[in-house]
Length: 362
Ligand code: TXA
Ligand code: MG
Image 1 (cartoon, protein in one colour):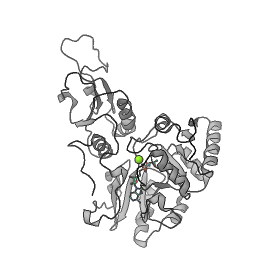
Image 2 (cartoon, helix red, strand yellow; image 1 turned 30 degrees about the horizontal axis):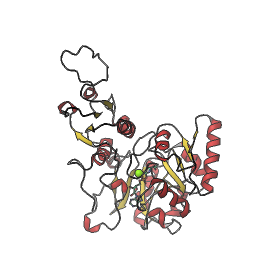
Image 3 (cartoon, protein in one colour; image 1 turned 135 degrees about the vertical axis):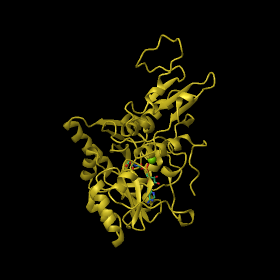
Image 4 (spheres, helix red, strand yellow; image 1 turned 120 degrees about the vertical axis):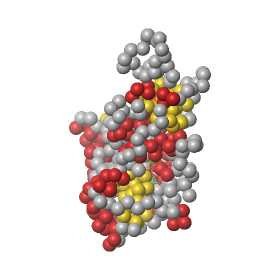
């Protein structure tokens, strides 16, 4: 694998920059190279999904300790039938999902066709697939004319990148090119669903929430019991997946948290007021001041307590706090409805191992 001394970052803000970025990206993909691209969820590390050698470079750059199945991003709906088999029963559900949510942050697991190399699906007989709504990603995958395998562009076990800078920090020197499309829209990874028993099972929570799916009359089936599970529940489902290096603990209310002396603690707050603590008689504090006497650093997920904004900020703030050499990060729980459930899912994994974390998968 080529290890360029320094990874190039190209912007896509002007029309000219974008045309140049698309041309460079497509040329590298055709050579079997891997490049980082923006999607509407998080940045992805993309390779020609039908070229096993190119796909292997993804695992190498990410340092994934084993081969885990990747999401295949197709250029258009016609490609869906080329990579996946649609049984009669699934067809209706799939076409409704596709109509409602594609292009967009929804990944569908389907039985795979032989054209998809085993390394992409880690030997599974199913393939995860979606069409990204990001205009730059869409332009590149269409110009390339074939599906792209793309996991999140972070090293194994780390937080998914939501800006080109995050990708650079993780993968500089390991990949030739990063296409900068600005901060991503959703900030968390796509919702993953499988089709089963005439309904859909949510395998990973994300921007397309359970509530949204129910509202348009999809029947949600609950997770399989251990005895039925024959497939891996891979990285996104590992309990400690979205981990900052700094230990992280969850709390309902940061106001009730008392730090030990000499500890530098960061706060990821849901309640806007949690960041600004004042001790009585402290006249150096003024309204709107975000200094906190209890916390060495504070990030408020959303001043307006808007879950969508919170999702967009989540990984960026975790990353920023992680860079401050803190002893501990305290994260306030967010309401677990709608997008909040997806945010809590990531926070619980970031908190692992702690009593808040989900158990090991079967
Ligand atoms: O938003 C996203 O989905 C981003 C952007 C780049 O598209 N991609 C992403 O990929 O999050 P990755 O590889 O970080 O997460 C993909 C998840 C993994 O947890 C993997 O185990 C699961 O999808 N997965 C992939 N193929 C699967 C399959 N055939 N069956 C079950 N799970 C699968
Ligand atoms: Mg990932």
